[in-house]
Length: 284
Image (cartoon, rainbow, N blue to C red; front, side, top):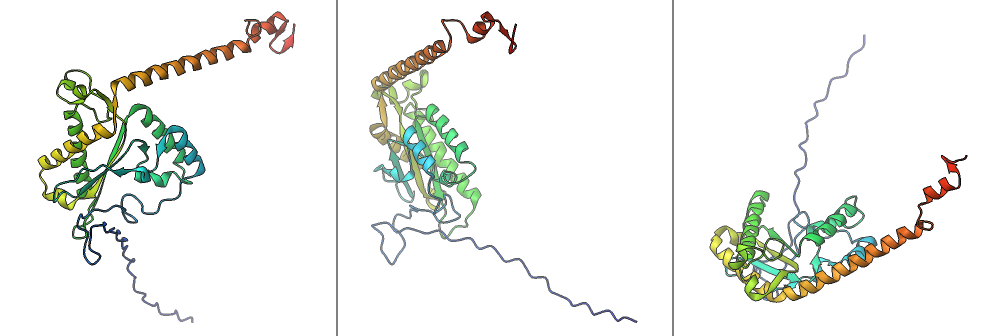
């Protein structure tokens, strides 16, 4: 007779709770070393928060592509010089070059989406003159809610689009054509488009208590400043368009000349084989 061994009761261990890494608050130059930053801005976000803190270095193929297409990295952004009113903690940086989105840097290394991301940026450069994006972070006292951060980001994006429209530009930085341009200032100033990159960064704490009218006025000041820094005149656009047409004409002429060079005496090769009596790979 065999005696079965008693079963031992093993308590079920709870899964370890995932603790998110806190973001790093960078103290501004005017901040006290013993206290919080006076401006309350996050210049570099932390790991796990938009965008990643230490993305993988760009591949050599990406650097070569960026040089050929005139696209820079986020370190090319410089301060615009427009100060946001309190408690609106926003900072605006800009660049005359088109700049990669900080969130897309993780795709520009040894990543499966690298080539797809580059193709999308190539299409974006052809269609859009102004690249702009909004990056918001949460305060220490607020819960890190993705919904709240997304809602506040959309608020700033809507205010910036409306500010562009009031100045006579669409969301891609190109001047509006038609009755809308009479209201904006683009026609009066002679600016054809806004070309470059703009980044609006800040924390959502001030946005929760700031009226949308104040945000709209701040965006109006930003767009007015961008007209002097990123504005391209109508005369320059006409010159660039004429140069682009000239290059396309030369390219099409070279393609046609190369196609004619493949023909023998103006007769396609297939017709030449037929005149020699070769059909279907066999001599008739």
